[in-house]
Image (tube, rainbow, N blue to C red; front, side, top):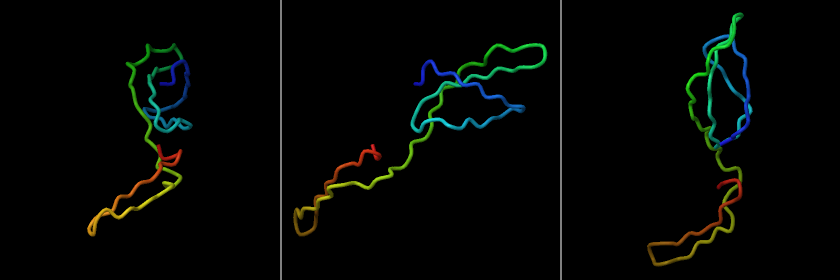
Amino acid sequence: MNAGRIRAVEVSGPSSHIPGLAPAHAYLVRVVAVNGVGTSQPSSEVRVSTAHEPPTLPPTNVRVIPISSTSLRVTWQVSGSAR
């Protein structure tokens, strides 16, 4: 969780797009209303996680070993960006 980081996004309607978030991270979101008289209390917190990104590098060190006449054993190492 990105504890301690607060980002304010100003909008003029009942929805918003928040860019620049990290993939596969959890965030807490609260909303306040602001007008010429003041600011409302914050909404309840909503916990949301951004999606994971697909791997950018292929598996490495792929090995195929025949086990029998009808099967193979395949092993590989996961690339750093695929974890």
